[in-house]
Amino acid sequence: MTDILDELEWRDVIAQTTDADALRTALAEGPITVYAGFDPTAPSLHAGNLATLLILTRFQRAGHRPIGLVGGATGLIGDPSGRSTERSLNSSEVVAEWVARIRVQVEKFLSFDDGPTGATLVSNLDWTSEMSAIDFLRDVGKHFPVNRMLARESVSARLGGDGLSYTEFSYQILQANDYLELYRRHGCTLQLGGSDQWGNITAGVDLIRRVEGTHTHALTGKLITKADGTKFGKTAGGAVWLDPALTSPYAFYQYWLNADDRDVVRFLKVFTFRTQDEIAELEKAVADRPAAREAQRTLAEDVTTLVHGADELARVVAASRALFGQGSLEELDARTLGSALAEVPRAEVSAVGASFVDLLAESGLVESKSAARRAVKEGGAYLNNVKITDEAYVPSAGDLLHGRFLVLRRGKRSIGGVEVTA
Image 1 (cartoon, rainbow, N blue to C red):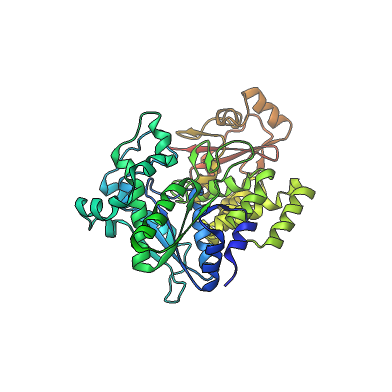
Image 2: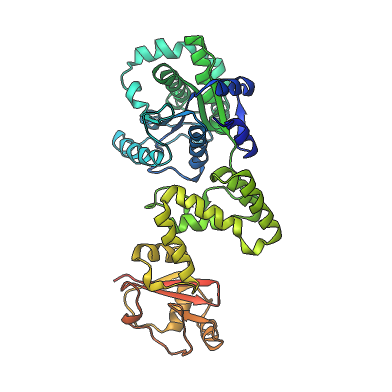
Protein backbone atom coordinates (compact mmCIF):
# COMPACT_ATOMS: atom_id res chain seq x y z
CA MET A 1 0.00 0.00 0.00
CA THR A 2 1.22 3.50 -0.76
CA ASP A 3 1.33 6.11 1.98
CA ILE A 4 -1.86 7.93 1.17
CA LEU A 5 -1.33 10.67 3.77
CA ASP A 6 2.01 11.61 2.24
CA GLU A 7 0.33 11.86 -1.15
CA LEU A 8 -2.54 13.97 0.17
CA GLU A 9 -0.07 16.25 1.93
CA TRP A 10 1.99 17.00 -1.17
CA ARG A 11 -1.22 17.53 -3.09
CA ASP A 12 -2.06 20.05 -0.34
CA VAL A 13 -5.65 18.89 0.09
CA ILE A 14 -5.83 18.12 3.82
CA ALA A 15 -7.60 20.70 5.98
CA GLN A 16 -8.04 18.84 9.28
CA THR A 17 -7.52 15.43 10.86
CA THR A 18 -8.47 14.23 14.32
CA ASP A 19 -5.10 12.58 14.99
CA ALA A 20 -2.75 12.38 12.03
CA ASP A 21 -0.22 10.09 13.77
CA ALA A 22 -2.90 7.62 14.89
CA LEU A 23 -4.44 7.63 11.44
CA ARG A 24 -1.06 7.03 9.80
CA THR A 25 -0.50 4.06 12.12
CA ALA A 26 -3.93 2.59 11.30
CA LEU A 27 -3.34 2.99 7.58
CA ALA A 28 0.05 1.29 7.80
CA GLU A 29 -1.32 -1.72 9.70
CA GLY A 30 -3.57 -2.82 6.86
CA PRO A 31 -6.50 -1.85 4.70
CA ILE A 32 -9.04 0.33 6.50
CA THR A 33 -12.59 1.15 5.45
CA VAL A 34 -13.24 4.80 4.65
CA TYR A 35 -16.41 6.60 3.64
CA ALA A 36 -17.57 9.90 2.22
CA GLY A 37 -21.17 11.06 2.01
CA PHE A 38 -22.95 13.00 -0.71
CA ASP A 39 -26.35 14.53 -0.07
CA PRO A 40 -28.87 14.81 -2.93
CA THR A 41 -29.48 18.55 -2.58
CA ALA A 42 -29.50 18.82 -6.38
CA PRO A 43 -29.94 16.36 -9.25
CA SER A 44 -26.17 16.13 -9.73
CA LEU A 45 -22.86 16.44 -7.96
CA HIS A 46 -20.82 19.51 -8.87
CA ALA A 47 -17.15 20.39 -9.26
CA GLY A 48 -16.78 21.05 -5.52
CA ASN A 49 -18.00 17.53 -4.67
CA LEU A 50 -15.42 16.16 -7.09
CA ALA A 51 -12.56 17.10 -4.74
CA THR A 52 -13.95 14.88 -1.96
CA LEU A 53 -14.86 12.10 -4.38
CA LEU A 54 -11.31 12.02 -5.70
CA ILE A 55 -9.84 11.81 -2.18
CA LEU A 56 -12.06 8.75 -1.64
CA THR A 57 -10.82 7.33 -4.95
CA ARG A 58 -7.20 7.93 -3.94
CA PHE A 59 -7.75 5.93 -0.76
CA GLN A 60 -8.98 2.99 -2.82
CA ARG A 61 -6.03 3.22 -5.20
CA ALA A 62 -3.74 3.25 -2.15
CA GLY A 63 -5.15 -0.11 -1.01
CA HIS A 64 -8.08 0.82 1.23
CA ARG A 65 -11.77 0.00 1.00
CA PRO A 66 -14.12 2.89 0.13
CA ILE A 67 -17.80 3.36 0.89
CA GLY A 68 -19.78 5.94 -1.03
CA LEU A 69 -22.82 7.08 0.92
CA VAL A 70 -25.68 8.89 -0.79
CA GLY A 71 -27.91 10.70 1.69
CA GLY A 72 -31.36 9.36 0.99
CA ALA A 73 -32.29 10.29 4.58
CA THR A 74 -30.13 13.36 5.25
CA GLY A 75 -31.14 14.72 1.85
CA LEU A 76 -34.69 14.94 3.19
CA ILE A 77 -33.48 17.11 6.09
CA GLY A 78 -30.82 19.47 4.77
CA ASP A 79 -27.43 20.35 6.20
CA PRO A 80 -27.23 23.85 7.75
CA SER A 81 -23.44 23.98 7.29
CA GLY A 82 -22.36 27.06 5.38
CA ARG A 83 -25.91 28.37 5.02
CA SER A 84 -27.37 31.58 6.44
CA THR A 85 -31.01 30.62 5.80
CA GLU A 86 -33.19 27.56 6.16
CA ARG A 87 -32.94 25.10 3.28
CA SER A 88 -36.10 24.41 1.27
CA LEU A 89 -37.14 20.80 1.75
CA ASN A 90 -37.71 18.62 -1.31
CA SER A 91 -40.33 15.91 -1.58
CA SER A 92 -39.38 12.29 -0.94
CA GLU A 93 -40.01 11.53 -4.64
CA VAL A 94 -37.59 14.24 -5.78
CA VAL A 95 -34.92 13.16 -3.28
CA ALA A 96 -35.27 9.51 -4.34
CA GLU A 97 -34.79 10.50 -7.99
CA TRP A 98 -31.71 12.57 -7.14
CA VAL A 99 -30.29 9.74 -5.02
CA ALA A 100 -30.49 7.41 -8.03
CA ARG A 101 -28.74 9.92 -10.28
CA ILE A 102 -25.96 10.66 -7.81
CA ARG A 103 -25.37 6.96 -7.14
CA VAL A 104 -24.54 6.54 -10.84
CA GLN A 105 -22.04 9.41 -10.68
CA VAL A 106 -20.28 8.07 -7.58
CA GLU A 107 -20.11 4.56 -9.08
CA LYS A 108 -18.05 5.84 -12.01
CA PHE A 109 -15.12 6.72 -9.76
CA LEU A 110 -14.90 3.59 -7.62
CA SER A 111 -13.97 -0.01 -8.42
CA PHE A 112 -16.51 -2.62 -7.31
CA ASP A 113 -15.03 -6.10 -7.01
CA ASP A 114 -14.84 -8.95 -4.51
CA GLY A 115 -11.36 -8.08 -3.28
CA PRO A 116 -10.40 -6.44 0.02
CA THR A 117 -10.56 -2.97 -1.57
CA GLY A 118 -13.86 -3.46 -3.42
CA ALA A 119 -16.14 -0.46 -3.02
CA THR A 120 -19.59 -0.39 -1.43
CA LEU A 121 -22.38 2.07 -2.19
CA VAL A 122 -25.11 2.73 0.39
CA SER A 123 -27.98 5.08 1.20
CA ASN A 124 -28.48 6.18 4.80
CA LEU A 125 -32.21 5.83 4.29
CA ASP A 126 -31.66 2.06 4.58
CA TRP A 127 -31.11 2.27 8.35
CA THR A 128 -32.64 5.64 9.22
CA SER A 129 -36.08 4.69 7.93
CA GLU A 130 -36.10 1.64 10.23
CA MET A 131 -35.73 3.74 13.40
CA SER A 132 -38.72 5.08 15.30
CA ALA A 133 -38.57 8.59 16.75
CA ILE A 134 -38.40 7.09 20.25
CA ASP A 135 -35.49 4.79 19.30
CA PHE A 136 -33.65 7.68 17.66
CA LEU A 137 -34.03 9.94 20.71
CA ARG A 138 -33.21 7.23 23.28
CA ASP A 139 -30.42 5.37 21.48
CA VAL A 140 -28.71 8.21 19.61
CA GLY A 141 -29.96 11.58 20.80
CA LYS A 142 -29.08 10.93 24.46
CA HIS A 143 -25.37 11.00 23.56
CA PHE A 144 -25.48 14.61 22.30
CA PRO A 145 -25.11 17.36 24.93
CA VAL A 146 -27.12 20.34 23.71
CA ASN A 147 -24.49 22.83 24.85
CA ARG A 148 -21.91 21.10 22.64
CA MET A 149 -24.31 21.03 19.69
CA LEU A 150 -25.01 24.76 20.11
CA ALA A 151 -21.27 25.47 20.03
CA ARG A 152 -20.77 23.89 16.61
CA GLU A 153 -20.05 26.51 13.96
CA SER A 154 -22.87 25.37 11.63
CA VAL A 155 -25.35 26.01 14.46
CA SER A 156 -23.85 28.99 16.29
CA ALA A 157 -23.51 30.97 13.04
CA ARG A 158 -27.26 30.74 12.54
CA LEU A 159 -28.33 31.59 16.08
CA GLY A 160 -27.36 35.22 15.68
CA GLY A 161 -29.70 35.65 12.72
CA ASP A 162 -33.03 34.06 11.90
CA GLY A 163 -32.11 30.90 13.79
CA LEU A 164 -32.72 27.39 12.49
CA SER A 165 -35.39 24.77 12.83
CA TYR A 166 -35.12 21.65 14.97
CA THR A 167 -35.06 19.77 11.65
CA GLU A 168 -31.73 21.29 10.60
CA PHE A 169 -30.48 21.31 14.18
CA SER A 170 -30.83 17.51 14.21
CA TYR A 171 -28.79 17.05 11.00
CA GLN A 172 -25.49 16.53 12.82
CA ILE A 173 -27.05 13.72 14.87
CA LEU A 174 -28.21 11.95 11.71
CA GLN A 175 -24.78 12.22 10.10
CA ALA A 176 -23.09 11.03 13.29
CA ASN A 177 -25.43 8.04 13.34
CA ASP A 178 -24.41 7.24 9.77
CA TYR A 179 -20.80 6.90 10.89
CA LEU A 180 -21.86 4.68 13.79
CA GLU A 181 -23.92 2.44 11.47
CA LEU A 182 -21.08 2.13 8.95
CA TYR A 183 -18.67 1.31 11.77
CA ARG A 184 -21.01 -1.45 12.96
CA ARG A 185 -21.96 -2.81 9.53
CA HIS A 186 -18.68 -2.45 7.63
CA GLY A 187 -15.96 -1.74 10.19
CA CYS A 188 -15.56 1.79 8.81
CA THR A 189 -13.02 3.82 10.82
CA LEU A 190 -12.45 6.93 8.70
CA GLN A 191 -14.88 9.53 7.41
CA LEU A 192 -13.94 12.06 4.71
CA GLY A 193 -15.64 15.32 3.84
CA GLY A 194 -15.19 18.96 2.99
CA SER A 195 -13.80 21.31 5.62
CA ASP A 196 -17.30 22.68 6.25
CA GLN A 197 -18.27 19.19 7.47
CA TRP A 198 -15.75 19.08 10.32
CA GLY A 199 -18.32 19.54 13.07
CA ASN A 200 -20.67 16.90 11.66
CA ILE A 201 -17.86 14.39 11.14
CA THR A 202 -16.31 14.80 14.57
CA ALA A 203 -19.79 14.38 16.06
CA GLY A 204 -19.72 10.89 14.57
CA VAL A 205 -16.24 10.20 15.96
CA ASP A 206 -17.49 11.24 19.40
CA LEU A 207 -20.67 9.13 19.11
CA ILE A 208 -18.70 5.98 18.25
CA ARG A 209 -16.38 6.60 21.19
CA ARG A 210 -19.33 7.04 23.57
CA VAL A 211 -21.33 4.05 22.30
CA GLU A 212 -18.65 1.56 21.26
CA GLY A 213 -15.62 2.76 23.20
CA THR A 214 -13.61 2.87 19.96
CA HIS A 215 -11.45 5.65 18.55
CA THR A 216 -12.10 6.36 14.87
CA HIS A 217 -10.80 9.01 12.52
CA ALA A 218 -11.85 12.07 10.53
CA LEU A 219 -10.18 13.86 7.63
CA THR A 220 -11.45 16.88 5.74
CA GLY A 221 -10.30 18.40 2.49
CA LYS A 222 -9.47 22.06 1.99
CA LEU A 223 -12.03 24.43 0.56
CA ILE A 224 -11.13 25.05 -3.10
CA THR A 225 -10.71 28.73 -3.88
CA LYS A 226 -9.69 30.74 -6.94
CA ALA A 227 -6.92 33.31 -7.04
CA ASP A 228 -9.12 35.98 -8.63
CA GLY A 229 -11.60 35.86 -5.74
CA THR A 230 -14.47 34.34 -7.70
CA LYS A 231 -16.12 31.20 -6.39
CA PHE A 232 -14.66 27.90 -7.51
CA GLY A 233 -17.01 25.71 -9.57
CA LYS A 234 -19.20 28.62 -10.68
CA THR A 235 -19.66 30.18 -14.10
CA ALA A 236 -21.90 32.94 -15.39
CA GLY A 237 -24.44 30.22 -16.16
CA GLY A 238 -24.32 28.68 -12.66
CA ALA A 239 -22.63 25.68 -11.08
CA VAL A 240 -20.28 23.36 -12.96
CA TRP A 241 -22.22 20.08 -12.72
CA LEU A 242 -20.95 16.56 -13.37
CA ASP A 243 -24.19 15.66 -15.16
CA PRO A 244 -23.75 16.35 -18.91
CA ALA A 245 -27.42 17.34 -19.15
CA LEU A 246 -26.78 20.24 -16.73
CA THR A 247 -23.26 21.24 -17.81
CA SER A 248 -22.34 20.06 -21.28
CA PRO A 249 -19.00 18.24 -21.68
CA TYR A 250 -17.86 21.12 -23.89
CA ALA A 251 -18.66 23.73 -21.22
CA PHE A 252 -17.10 21.46 -18.58
CA TYR A 253 -13.89 21.18 -20.61
CA GLN A 254 -13.77 24.94 -21.22
CA TYR A 255 -14.13 25.65 -17.50
CA TRP A 256 -10.91 23.79 -16.70
CA LEU A 257 -9.16 25.02 -19.86
CA ASN A 258 -9.74 28.60 -18.72
CA ALA A 259 -8.06 28.06 -15.33
CA ASP A 260 -5.92 30.97 -14.20
CA ASP A 261 -2.14 30.44 -14.30
CA ARG A 262 -2.18 31.08 -10.55
CA ASP A 263 -4.64 28.21 -9.98
CA VAL A 264 -3.78 25.56 -12.54
CA VAL A 265 -0.97 23.76 -10.68
CA ARG A 266 -3.08 23.55 -7.52
CA PHE A 267 -6.02 22.22 -9.55
CA LEU A 268 -3.76 19.61 -11.18
CA LYS A 269 -2.83 18.35 -7.71
CA VAL A 270 -6.42 18.20 -6.48
CA PHE A 271 -8.31 17.02 -9.55
CA THR A 272 -5.94 14.76 -11.51
CA PHE A 273 -3.86 11.65 -10.88
CA ARG A 274 -0.72 13.16 -12.42
CA THR A 275 2.45 12.33 -10.51
CA GLN A 276 4.60 14.78 -8.59
CA ASP A 277 7.20 14.78 -11.39
CA GLU A 278 4.56 15.33 -14.10
CA ILE A 279 3.04 18.24 -12.24
CA ALA A 280 6.48 19.75 -11.62
CA GLU A 281 7.09 19.69 -15.40
CA LEU A 282 3.73 21.35 -16.04
CA GLU A 283 4.46 23.97 -13.38
CA LYS A 284 7.70 24.76 -15.20
CA ALA A 285 5.78 25.06 -18.46
CA VAL A 286 3.45 27.62 -16.86
CA ALA A 287 6.47 29.70 -15.87
CA ASP A 288 8.45 29.29 -19.10
CA ARG A 289 5.72 29.13 -21.76
CA PRO A 290 2.50 30.56 -20.26
CA ALA A 291 0.96 31.33 -23.66
CA ALA A 292 1.09 27.64 -24.63
CA ARG A 293 -1.26 26.77 -21.72
CA GLU A 294 0.06 23.19 -21.56
CA ALA A 295 -0.97 22.81 -17.92
CA GLN A 296 -4.50 24.02 -18.62
CA ARG A 297 -4.93 21.63 -21.54
CA THR A 298 -3.68 18.72 -19.42
CA LEU A 299 -6.04 19.67 -16.60
CA ALA A 300 -9.04 20.02 -18.91
CA GLU A 301 -8.33 16.76 -20.71
CA ASP A 302 -7.71 14.74 -17.54
CA VAL A 303 -10.76 15.98 -15.63
CA THR A 304 -13.08 15.72 -18.62
CA THR A 305 -11.92 12.15 -19.22
CA LEU A 306 -12.47 11.28 -15.54
CA VAL A 307 -16.01 12.64 -15.51
CA HIS A 308 -17.25 12.09 -19.07
CA GLY A 309 -14.93 9.51 -20.62
CA ALA A 310 -12.34 9.44 -23.40
CA ASP A 311 -14.87 9.38 -26.25
CA GLU A 312 -16.58 12.53 -25.01
CA LEU A 313 -13.22 14.23 -24.57
CA ALA A 314 -12.34 13.43 -28.19
CA ARG A 315 -15.60 15.05 -29.36
CA VAL A 316 -15.03 18.11 -27.20
CA VAL A 317 -11.43 18.61 -28.38
CA ALA A 318 -12.51 18.17 -32.00
CA ALA A 319 -15.21 20.81 -31.52
CA SER A 320 -12.81 23.22 -29.84
CA ARG A 321 -10.32 22.87 -32.69
CA ALA A 322 -12.93 23.06 -35.43
CA LEU A 323 -14.48 26.26 -34.07
CA PHE A 324 -11.14 27.98 -34.49
CA GLY A 325 -10.54 26.72 -38.00
CA GLN A 326 -8.29 23.77 -37.10
CA GLY A 327 -10.71 20.99 -37.99
CA SER A 328 -13.87 20.13 -39.88
CA LEU A 329 -17.10 21.59 -38.52
CA GLU A 330 -19.06 19.20 -40.71
CA GLU A 331 -17.68 16.21 -38.80
CA LEU A 332 -19.04 17.41 -35.44
CA ASP A 333 -22.27 15.82 -34.22
CA ALA A 334 -25.23 18.13 -33.59
CA ARG A 335 -25.19 17.75 -29.79
CA THR A 336 -21.51 18.67 -29.45
CA LEU A 337 -21.76 21.58 -31.88
CA GLY A 338 -24.90 22.90 -30.18
CA SER A 339 -23.23 22.66 -26.77
CA ALA A 340 -20.17 24.52 -28.04
CA LEU A 341 -22.24 27.34 -29.56
CA ALA A 342 -24.21 27.67 -26.33
CA GLU A 343 -21.01 28.95 -24.71
CA VAL A 344 -20.36 31.82 -27.18
CA PRO A 345 -22.24 34.94 -28.30
CA ARG A 346 -25.10 33.79 -30.52
CA ALA A 347 -28.39 34.71 -32.07
CA GLU A 348 -31.53 32.67 -32.56
CA VAL A 349 -33.51 33.20 -35.75
CA SER A 350 -36.64 31.60 -37.12
CA ALA A 351 -35.23 31.16 -40.62
CA VAL A 352 -32.28 32.05 -42.79
CA GLY A 353 -32.56 35.24 -44.84
CA ALA A 354 -30.62 37.87 -42.89
CA SER A 355 -27.32 39.03 -44.30
CA PHE A 356 -24.02 37.82 -42.91
CA VAL A 357 -23.32 41.36 -41.66
CA ASP A 358 -26.65 41.45 -39.82
CA LEU A 359 -25.96 38.07 -38.22
CA LEU A 360 -22.51 39.17 -37.02
CA ALA A 361 -24.14 42.12 -35.25
CA GLU A 362 -27.20 40.22 -33.96
CA SER A 363 -25.03 37.50 -32.45
CA GLY A 364 -23.11 40.06 -30.42
CA LEU A 365 -19.82 38.99 -31.97
CA VAL A 366 -19.32 42.61 -33.07
CA GLU A 367 -20.83 45.71 -31.52
CA SER A 368 -22.59 47.09 -34.59
CA LYS A 369 -23.35 46.56 -38.27
CA SER A 370 -20.67 49.06 -39.20
CA ALA A 371 -18.15 47.01 -37.19
CA ALA A 372 -19.40 43.89 -38.99
CA ARG A 373 -18.93 45.49 -42.39
CA ARG A 374 -15.46 46.61 -41.37
CA ALA A 375 -14.53 43.06 -40.29
CA VAL A 376 -15.66 41.71 -43.68
CA LYS A 377 -13.82 44.43 -45.57
CA GLU A 378 -10.60 43.77 -43.66
CA GLY A 379 -10.78 40.01 -44.36
CA GLY A 380 -11.33 38.97 -40.76
CA ALA A 381 -14.88 37.54 -40.89
CA TYR A 382 -15.68 33.84 -41.37
CA LEU A 383 -18.80 31.74 -41.83
CA ASN A 384 -18.31 28.05 -41.00
CA ASN A 385 -14.53 28.70 -41.23
CA VAL A 386 -14.84 30.12 -44.76
CA LYS A 387 -13.73 33.74 -45.19
CA ILE A 388 -16.55 36.01 -46.35
CA THR A 389 -15.46 38.99 -48.42
CA ASP A 390 -18.85 40.12 -49.78
CA GLU A 391 -20.63 42.51 -47.40
CA ALA A 392 -23.95 41.64 -49.05
CA TYR A 393 -23.61 37.86 -48.61
CA VAL A 394 -26.78 36.16 -47.33
CA PRO A 395 -26.35 32.66 -45.87
CA SER A 396 -28.70 30.06 -47.30
CA ALA A 397 -30.16 26.81 -46.00
CA GLY A 398 -27.22 25.06 -47.63
CA ASP A 399 -24.86 26.80 -45.21
CA LEU A 400 -26.61 25.39 -42.15
CA LEU A 401 -24.76 22.71 -40.22
CA HIS A 402 -27.13 19.91 -39.21
CA GLY A 403 -29.85 22.07 -40.72
CA ARG A 404 -29.68 24.41 -37.70
CA PHE A 405 -26.35 26.07 -37.01
CA LEU A 406 -24.03 28.70 -38.44
CA VAL A 407 -20.60 29.26 -36.93
CA LEU A 408 -19.34 32.84 -37.07
CA ARG A 409 -15.79 33.91 -36.41
CA ARG A 410 -14.04 37.27 -36.23
CA GLY A 411 -10.28 37.07 -36.50
CA LYS A 412 -8.54 34.06 -35.01
CA ARG A 413 -10.15 33.83 -31.57
CA SER A 414 -13.62 35.43 -31.42
CA ILE A 415 -16.41 32.91 -32.02
CA GLY A 416 -20.17 33.41 -32.36
CA GLY A 417 -23.07 31.38 -33.57
CA VAL A 418 -26.55 31.38 -35.06
CA GLU A 419 -29.23 28.77 -34.45
CA VAL A 420 -32.36 28.42 -36.55
CA THR A 421 -35.04 27.52 -34.02
CA ALA A 422 -38.14 27.21 -36.19
